[in-house]
Each structure stands twice: as C-alpha cells, then as structure tokens.
Image (cartoon, rainbow, N blue to C red; front, side, top):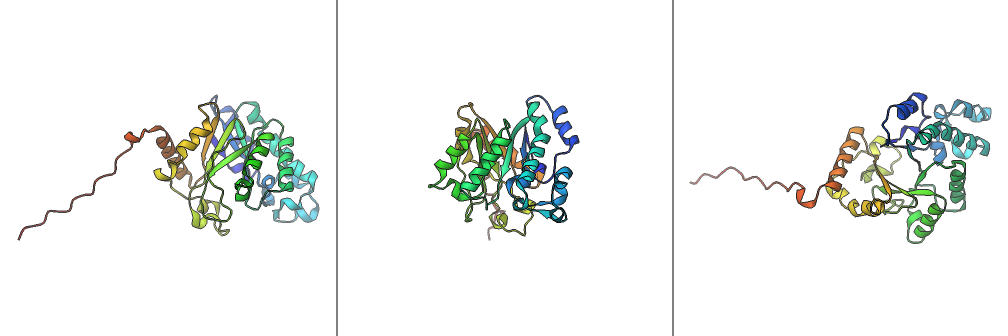
Length: 277
C-alpha cells in the first residue's frame, strides 16, 4: 500500500487515478490525503478545481490564496463533492484504504469542530475516513474518552501519530482504534523545525528513525492489530522520499526480527600496541 499525499495540495489527475486502478495488483491499497480546503487550511487558487473556482464571487476568485472561512457553504459542499467524486473509482475497485483528513493545530475541540466532522461523515457516504488531530486537547485526560467515543460513533478512524514531543500542541503517541482500520503516521522527531512556520514541509519532516525510536511501537502496533482482527496501516510521512523508504524498512525489521537476531554493537577497537622503552 501507499499514501497519496499530493491530493492534499492539488486535484488528482485522471492519469494518476487510471494508473492506480489499472496498473496495481489485487489487494493493493491507497490511502488518500484530503484536499487542504477540506481540512480547514488555505490553498493556492490554482490548486482548486476550475468548476469550483467558477462558483466563487469575482473578488474571491481574484485572490491568490483561498481560505476555507471565506467559502460559502454551497461552495464548500462543491469542494467535497468534487474531491469524493475523483477518488470514488478507487473505492469502487477496492483500491482505497482510507481518506486521511489531517487537521492543523488550530482545529480545536468544540461544537463547531464536531459538527464539521459529522458533516464530512454524512457527505462522504460509505468511504472509509480517518482523522488526524494535531491539538493535544483532543486526547488529553479530560477529552480522550469523549473524543474516541465520538469518532467511533461516527465511523471515523483515529489516526495515531509518532511526532515530536515537547510543544504546546504535541499529540502523544497513543494506540487507539475507532474503526476496523487503524492508521499510524510517523512524522519523525524533528522538534526544532516542527512548528516553525518558516520551514517547508520537507524541512519539518526530514528525519531518519533509529531502532530505539521505533521499538516502543511494537506493543502499540500489536494492540492495534488485535491479534490480526484489525488491519493496520503504518505510514512513514517523513522526508525525503528515499529516507521514508529506509524508515519503513527499519520498522519492518524492528517488527519482524526477534531480539536475539538483532546485530550486537561492535566492541571498541583496540589502539595500536605501544612500544616498550
């Protein structure tokens, strides 16, 4: 399986969609990131579907960047319908793993946020959805049970995260599943760059995992899998792409190698013999 992250920034092209449907083997699954406007984040105007742009008032259409709060409800409906319509073939041909809605840290718990999640669920029909929350309050001791119960009630998967800790908004790496699919996204541990707005996504996600980083996830992933009764998607959302591949390979080794098969540390090398005087 793969995660298709480019759909968060621009519409899915027919060529890419056709390749995913026609040129991948049976059982191959694709997790698709939702468009930025659907996760309450601004989007450059050129990344919005042309027919959706045509629905905008001239003053909005002239702006270089479109903000979700500026959209009339009917236009936001059109954005979601257009997005769902584009990825629907993946679902129909059993190639869709889930749609990941990755919300920003300013998406905070409250009636407005919950209503928005209900709206997503209702308009997406039978598509499998997963929600990544980047605000600690969603899963702190006061709100965790309520949040997970809400997601389970509305068939929204909770996205577990491995991300830098030590910030005001850091979400802890809890293992929780609210649907029959568990999703874990590994973002690296680049704390210095994590919340600096000047950094581009590649800089923020640049990280090479080490074995001690991943070993605590062994019991968590086993818990999520529930003895094989639940599917688990583990996504390395790190940069660059070849680094994400190495991180994924290391995770596989950590999960499959027994402790006694892991390479032992090399002993310190002896220095050159000293001459006797």
